[in-house]
Length: 361
Image (cartoon, rainbow, N blue to C red; front, top):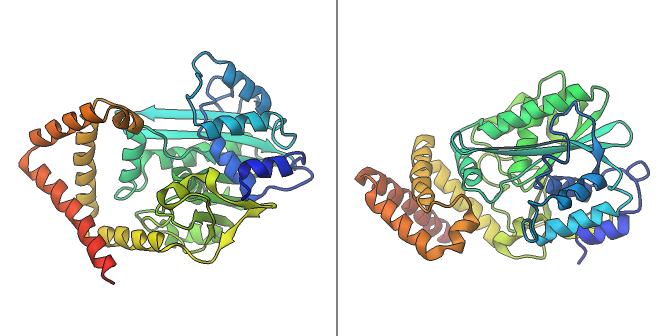
């Protein structure tokens, strides 16, 4: 089956001036938001943009970028884009990364100028850091979270720097949520300039965002794509106006956008989500219904107290030192006040009970 890489081989010789933006293009831009272009791409929206191929060359030339520092798929994508007439000459700007452990913020964005007076704004999804994962859990009981507010402000800055350009937005995972939030909250005077929002398997909201008037105004311009076994895009309050994409992976691994199947200028779609995806959605819905936002907040704080006791900053770091990580986590759990241990066990029991209840239906 064809992938984003096959799409680039087939479509990569046509400029955006000759062939308009497609859903696979939007996913490619969304993947680029994961790359740390700070230092090789201007940080501010009003600074002069640079060619994407030059930015990629400068990125790999940095001594801090060692082999294996990014995923093999990200690396392959970057190399393909440098020789793609469709992407190489595009100008890019606004490469911004914010990582604030004290305030629990993980945010990233980058923008691209497209022919025909268009601009694409891409937001980064959750990275490997514990801070990023913790902010994701915060989204289950708090809206807006800091990254959402930063996304809306970033979009305002891009719109102000390029006042005559039409705006396209996108992101993968949390980045898709940030794209939707930014579009809805950018301001009434700017929303008409938004042509499309590409939400690639991004989660929903814990408040009434999707039932508000601003979302309703944009609804037909919000394109949501999720794989067959998605458990991300169906989290919290979400729109049912989505397309189901076929993936070459199974289960949770379908969240990886590089596994999504492409045919021609679009993804390959299916009418049905898998039983795994439907069941997991029902379990999470049950959990949200029976636990209050305050209880979810306390659970999140308790859980990350244990995870942070590993003295690792990333999920991969915890998994890489499993034995020591487990020892530190057990010690942190033992040192917790009784009420926090009870909270953890009771909240996890709700998830287990949800699985039993849903499984019995």
